[in-house]
Length: 185
Image 1 (cartoon, rainbow, N blue to C red):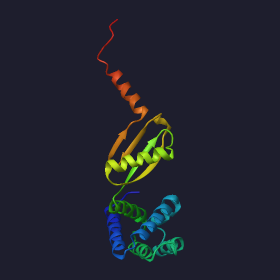
Image 2 (image 1 turned 120 degrees about the vertical axis):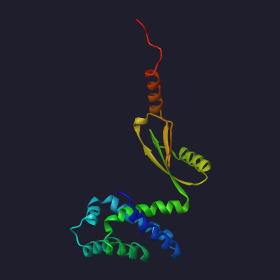
Image 3 (image 1 turned 60 degrees about the vertical axis):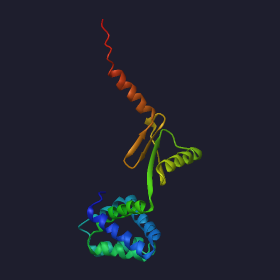
Image 4 (image 1 turned 30 degrees about the vertical axis):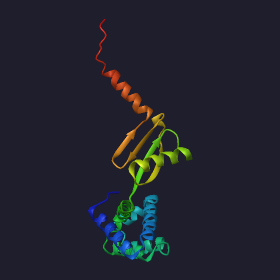
């Protein structure tokens, strides 16, 4: 999925309208539902992007899937998207909306990767440290990667802290390979 300038503009328009109507939280929940539905169902994604399927049919399918589950604002927005033949960008629009929502709410996403999962106490300590250092709300996403051996890799935005054992081993390996002392036999 690629976020385009067009999808960003549609998302910006939707978030502005939702703020104006005082329905930001509801529209956010709707866009999360749309985003997750598209991401979880590859056939649905392909259907939305297909030029063979007529717009009316796509509109009927979207009504059948989301009818009654989303707010009137979101429903009307999806109608506009389909009338403008942008339903293939619906995933990108929902993703852009999510990014704009996080920016509006000052919520940062932090991804922590460990060799084994975090327990509840360690998770809360890590979350507290990140919140206090960034002075912002943080949503912590946990990933497990056994290849790290131990330690963690923390990524917040474009910043990364790599305190993994595998990185330390690679640093040692690099320093040994750059050894200026050459044995003479």
